[in-house]
Length: 190
Ligand SMILES: Nc1ncnc2c1ncn2[C@@H]1O[C@H](COP(=O)(O)OP(=O)(O)OP(=O)(O)O)[C@@H](O)[C@H]1O
Ligand SMILES: [Mg+2]
Image (cartoon, rainbow, N blue to C red; front, side, top):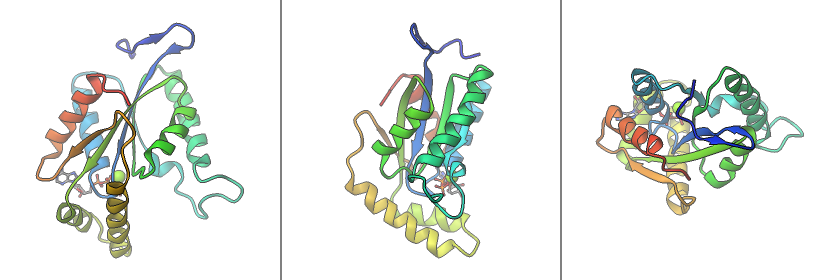
């Protein structure tokens, strides 16, 4: 498995990590699933992890732990299992407004990670439409408020060097996913 991965002589196979980030509701999970379908059809081994699941606990953060620490430990534990069965390609999704900081705990959790960061964006009406279409529970208004705040925060922040930004406004999931796959397989590392 993972025969296309570069090899680091000193520490074993390099793990190719795709970090797919952007405001909540922009389409990270949907795009990650579509990427997974496209890679699957090309028979390229990979694993997908939604990092929201790594620290979805209450209270958060767990008392006594730094904000990223539970995510780091959980990712390290899951990655150990995936690496043991031969995986060398990992797709991670997360909002990651503070991308530079997030890349630090991801690199700590995945030894030898070669990270490609892709930020998905969309204009405000598109974001609003996507959030409203998805959120039908009691947190709909709250989610929209958080998404618009993330959108504003993201616009203020410079991307870490090497980050690819893809505007998904008016585009299909299939075409966005194909572009991300091209960036990742093409070797656009952060
Ligand atoms: N390119 C696209 N075109 C049209 N609709 C899209 C596109 N990408 C995602 N969507 C839709 O937008 C909604 C939100 O997508 P998704 O749940 O993947 O967002 P997310 O970024 O993973 O959000 P969260 O951070 O909350 O997990 C879904 O209803 C999805 O079908
Ligand atoms: Mg998601």
